[in-house]
Image (cartoon, rainbow, N blue to C red):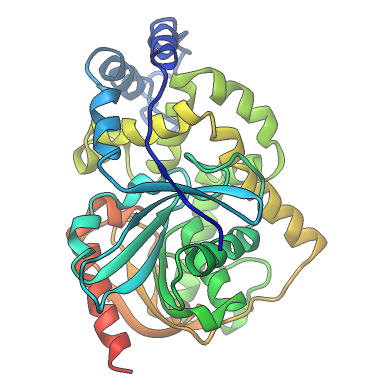
Amino acid sequence: MVKSKPFSINVPQSVLDDLQKRLTRTRWPDEVEGAGWSYGTSRHYMQNLADYWLNQYDWRQHEAYLNTLPQYTAEVDGVTLHFIHQPSANPDAIPVLLMHGWPDSFYRYHNVIPLLTNKFHLVIPSIPGMGFSERTALTTDNAANLMATLMTKELGYETFISAGGDSGALISMSLANNHPELLRGLYLTDVGYPDQTTDFASLSKPEQEFADFIQDWFMKEGAFNMIQSTKTQTLAYSLTDSPVGLAAWIMSMMSSLSTGEELDKRFGQDELLTNIMIYWVTQTIGSSMQIYRENMIQSVSEPKPFKKSDVPAGVAHCPWDAPLPREWAERRVNLIHFTDLEKGGHFTAWEAPDIWANDFQTFVQMLNKR
């Protein structure tokens, strides 16, 4: 059994001083008149966010809050993983692995912790290459293997539920495929998208509409995926060097189904900046994108047909995200629970924690009745 070590965040003051200088020296690009968000992240929005970041945002306050969460690091199969481990006092509590995606972080789940600890042991890792985990380049499958080891050999859980969205959903699905004996269930807000392996002729009308939406979205918003699957190092130079560049890239991705102004209302600038700061202070934006590159290499060198797991799954469709139909979820997972949530987007556990936590617990109740 590997041994975990307590971890706390203590960013050197020199890093924060340097950030202030870089924000002050920002060189602002021109913008097409009236562009808004149609050409990428709005300059007006970014200037307001940078001003708040420079003059009002207090990292030390948020760092102190993060350090109230029980954090650890452990070397798992040669990779240092950072994770929150919040055990429940309930002797009947169920272990749950909560997996974030990109461009969010373990911070995605901070608001659901107090909502779930009465019934669940919570484990919230930073995906390898992201946050306070080791900077490394791994595929989704490799990351899932590390999580299996973390949950069993490090933390001693024999079985657990894995929940996730975005890349975290794909890691959870990989766990279900490659380690089904460990999983009690899956709870997902994403189940993947129609791609070149999909039999489009077999799709129902709602699935076809979903596929059309995804194709249109990728044409308008998906350039980041191609860049991060091919030229991650090229992009990493600018995003590691410029805090405004980093924030603009992250906000462009987060606002691809909305706008930054709408995200400000859902999260608040402090929450958005704390997530961005996790990338900045760890200098992990470059390594965080490597999972796209590694997955692309694997898909070309080791193409695999899609495999549907038998692990029982719950799927939540979020109204501010892609219009995921039940039929597509049934095609991708062993569906026992599907919900059209009343609120939430691509980061529902972060945006609407009460709604996410309630539906998650409804799924677990169904799971326990099987």
